[in-house]
Length: 280
Image: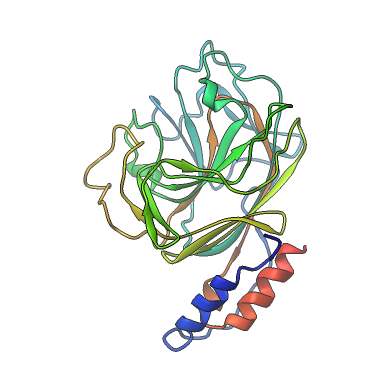
């Protein structure tokens, strides 16, 4: 698909026009979540470690980039990590520019080769158990090519969640997008249009490669988990944004967001804004 702004999102906006107040935006520009200097406004949680413990300097800032590195690990040992922006959002356009680099950490699992992701609608990091492997969230999965085989990116994975695909509740863990493969250490620009508990669209550049609906808590693939937090069937209206460390080094040079909340009752303005920001 080559449409920069999915038509189904416009249909959603039209449906909500009668019941949503039309707001005037104070700012429709990109908000840089990563400032290029430090990890201010971000919280780290790595499996088997306490909240806020940046074990072995896994997440660091160098050369204006947020880097994920494992030079301080003897063995990866399933120490999956996530770094969370401290403010939750519900309706937004998110842009992440990333590249995979170097070799996988010692002990990283085969499926985690050139594997990372942006976790959308995450549970509050304060509610994540010390030994919990992944946050309850909707994962926009980043995959890098191995130099030979096709391997799509901006896929969908569902740790502790389910979504609706083609009017059917999707309960398997992952499904591929229709993106092309990005081999080597090239930069990739991923965009995500997140509309509360209604719909989410993954884009590579301006090409829509995945769309799904009604994100909700459910399913497995998160262990252990607090049953007071994992309320199956509860729609996810908002949540935190996180980036992964899954054993392969990765760089992030831009993490930025446009808050779409003021425009959900104005479909023409919303369409115009998203198209404009995607061209920035």
